[in-house]
Image 1 (cartoon, rainbow, N blue to C red):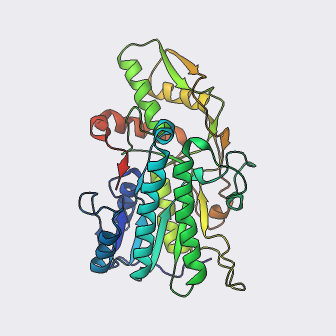
Image 2: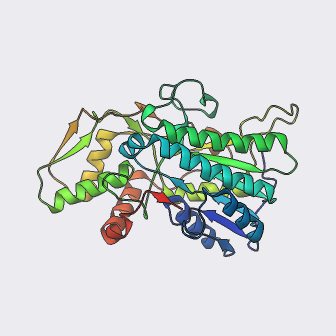
Image 3: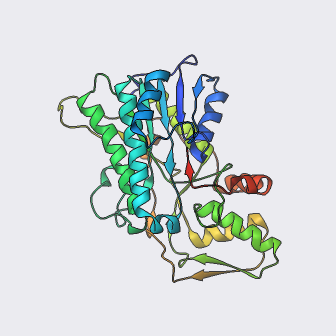
Length: 337
């Protein structure tokens, strides 16, 4: 569905989570397009889990558009050790921000979800309609449930307030790129592996240990591509709404991926090549692989005219250069707001 609202350069835009991987990329994208009326808040300035504070912020600032990128994020280990916190904190952040935006007449809202919302075992590639058709992957179930809740709240607002609500949700695959969190325990797979292989090379180690069997398949998208997709969709898409049935919302979210996946074994070999590590790669089978395969069907997105521009190898090379320059600055808390 063509967008009901189109951002103008004079509009006030709130980017929640502006210091995180996605939020910082969206700000770069907005500024490159001449959008400079951007509102941001750090966690110390605005705790998004505080409903009263969030309502006051929206009442005072009155943003026209919102990119909702704030979240508590982390890799498999961080998720497994704090399922309760990943569910609670993310749900509070999402619900407070979504409802405050709706109650203060935000023109359009972009909710950043995750491809982990889909069942552990489902047909590949994963279509939007596979949501809630079977159990989730247990290792990140808390995070996934929070993202599903945010997506559904956006969907219900569109359904029951279709004259005033314009909420879209973006479900990206695994993201990576400059500005990522390279923490050895709390980061996602690409930054964790870049750091691990780099340190092994510098320390002269003969091998690098990767978790799992190496057989798991994953899809990766560069952060500048996902920022470009978010901007494009905010300007060109308002979701599929079933106008014939008031209680039938249609599908208001879109998968955002590149359309191809890679095994963890091949990813490790590619990162080793880029880093220049010449030792052996061994696999620790004690640790889980997680979901066996996760390839999003992004055909609905591609039908809008958008497509990614950055190849995995090119993206990994620029991310590695970023790591070498700024690694110490990026070893930070896993909550980005």
